[in-house]
Length: 121
Image (cartoon, rainbow, N blue to C red; front, side, top):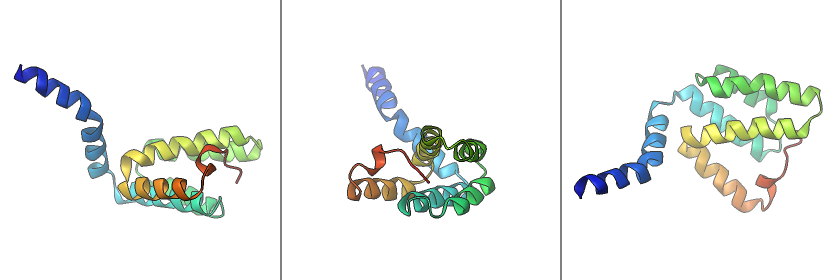
């Protein structure tokens, strides 16, 4: 019986545990890239180049990988590809930085519908 309870706790809390471990092991450069992403979202893309520079300095391969995708989407004038790339960074940052997570949540609450629209930087 105790093993079943332990298994349920592990399964239900596994995501939270994984997120806590991922956040604790994220480098300061990864967290800075996430804050740059939040700033870019808050200023409607005005700081896109600063965000890309911060992403390039990140230790996280998944964040760095989106730089080429963002540039390709901008050159192709493809808002859906741009939104998809930014959303992948947002998803990654949600697991890396509680500061990002809290700031993004606040932004979404105060900008009704903005988090559901395509980004058109």
